[in-house]
Image (tube, rainbow, N blue to C red; front, side, top):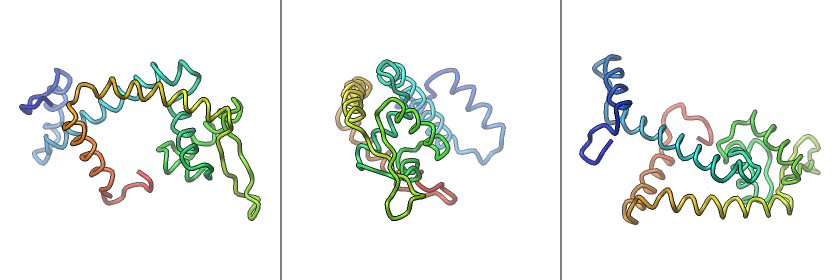
Length: 173
């Protein structure tokens, strides 16, 4: 929506008309916020994957997993999934790829041989630093449209949403 509350484009106009048909209990402000959030996140993720991650040999999920493990040093796959936002099922495949490419390594936990942790290899650390520098440059370009005060408010708003725990929210979401 624009600053005056008007829909951004024809797609949003049509979507608003359709969701209103679902009943008079539809909150168009909540709809507009979620509609735009989905569109912005899809656009940003696609942009980062196409301009940063794929060109240097990573997927967006690979970057998220590598970054999460790099931040923590070593993690079990279930913790990687919870913290990175990558599904538990996908983490295994992503770690397989990162391990194959020499960017991550699995280790068995001594106290319980059934448990595995994942850590970043030196090559993975180098790749992560390269990827993050490129991503950060892109982040700065993407957020340049917002004055500093609006960027700060946007961040505060997202953190408020992240801290909210709606009934039935999945763990780590």
